Image (tube, rainbow, N blue to C red):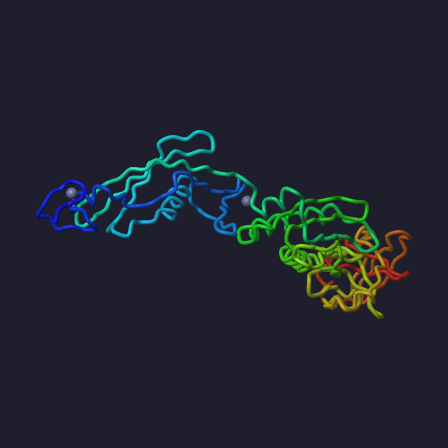
Length: 350
Ligand SMILES: [Zn+2]
Ligand SMILES: [Zn+2]
């Protein structure tokens, strides 16, 4: 037997060729001379198969990975390793040198391939949505029967900004696509309903209020065969602010704290704090504002009574002494509030 290529005799043959002729004709791998990679121009996502995934790879690493995936080792080659280097880049085309090393019939061989890889920079679906101002939910921040205070708007903006920063790390759709100030309050447009929901809950938790939600049908997604809804979430901050005065049943009190669970008032008769659930909100009446507090002077004091001057008429008013008021001395100024014709002392803060 002889090699059909070089004619050598007395050689062991493989598929009709001597080992060195066979190895010389082996390419180690097959690889297309042109490849394409699709990446998002706005974020770190790449298009793989039929979906977009986020990656930490650099563009060059991504190209190398694609080349490795597209290379098919020859069935007669063993221990094939690839070395992949960038030779040249022109715009979105990367010229790559692929050096393949391996063994064929025990003979080490090396092959080089030049491959052009085109990088298509597009927008992934999430970035397209972001760019087009897409939103799933709108949070309408309002106040009940009044305008929002500047401090409330600032507080809400701060909470939203902080939370979005956290949420966007795990949810790409957790972005604010629009913030619109209107006469009635502020509308916040969010890319993700789930994020909008978390943010609304956090706002309510920290600022109190009454929350409601209503989906609106926006049309129909014909390709997916389902209705498209957007969700409107409303958070209505209470009628009253911290420091205002409320009537609840027969009690009047000053608002000490407002949070997602309850409203805390200091009862002006007992000077004790009382918690009121939000379920009672519609039974609360604002009877005075924090700006209605007046200052007057204590004129006399006994173990059972404290006397002060009415802030407007300057007539002496006698009141029952209470333990919270014993620290006040004659001649000192105290805060008072008149509600429904009755004067109450607001004990000094400790
Ligand atoms: Zn031969
Ligand atoms: Zn993207």
